[in-house]
Each structure stands twice: as structure tokens, then as C-alpha cells.
Length: 200
Image (cartoon, rainbow, N blue to C red; front, side, top):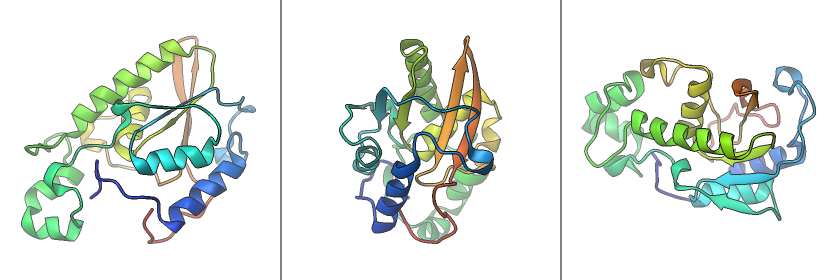
């Protein structure tokens, strides 16, 4: 469980980011292809975590990258750095609640999914207003990305972890026209093979 804890990308993570940098934007593979050519990214926002900054610098080398605390991953408190197998033994009910009933998950000294959603949605609405008509990139983490996507295609918090997944080094694309947002791509991984057990 990583959360706010940080570590550099593994060799596998660097490879995935490099593959993405070769085809982004745009890329046009199968059902992950955007409906039209994607203009050059004008602004890049990034979580200040080292692993996201490393990814952003691979993807957008030479561009100004703006760090934004609201894009940080969920704070998992004392669980950070722990194996899920350990939590299954030490705090089985609470650990199961995090994955199976996130609407009820609450841990002292940590964030819950609803709190992450609040800051992620605030960020999205702010940049949507600030960058009307522009193409921007956001480099962040699973819980933040899913929170933004579920603002656009609402689902109950109890279904937060249900598919589709947001894999490491995947791309999600949102189009905003005349104040109406739609998801063009959700966790697209056409640029790399995610069927492995290695860590990023």
C-alpha cells in the first residue's frame, strides 16, 4: 500500500512511461483512439510525488510542470508501506472495507475515498474553467483519476473500485465542449502490455 509514500519508478515503470511518451498525444489504436487528432498539450499539472513527477518529465520533457497538492494520492496513514497480505491478518475487516465497501471506510490518521474525491473534483472544476478551449495534461494517481472520471460518469461510492481499471501509465481522456464533459478514453493501455505482475 503506497499512498503518499514515495519510491522511484522501477525499470518496468520507466519502460511503460517511455512507451507512452512515444505515442502521446495522440495515439490511435483500436477502441482507445480519440475521435479526432489531439492538439499539443499546453499545460501540465502533476502530483508532487516523486513517481508522478518522474513520469511527467518522461512524457513532457522540457515543458513547465505545475505541481498541485490536490493531485496527491490518497493518504493511507499507518497502512503506507505495508503489504496487503499483512493487513488481511492484522486489520481484516477494515482492509476488506476499503476495497469492498469504500463508502463505509474510515481510518484514523488517513483519508477516505470521499475526501479524495472532494479535492479532486474541486481541482477539475477549477482547471476546466481556467483552461477553456485548451488541451491540458494531468499526471496523478488511481484514486484521484477515478474520482474525476466518476464526476463525469457518476457512480455510487460503493462501486468505486468496480471496472474499468486505471492501470499504471494508462491514459484517460476527457473532452469538455460547451460545459458538457464526456469520457473519450478510460484507463487506456494500448501503448503497453499491462498483463504482468511487476510493480511500477
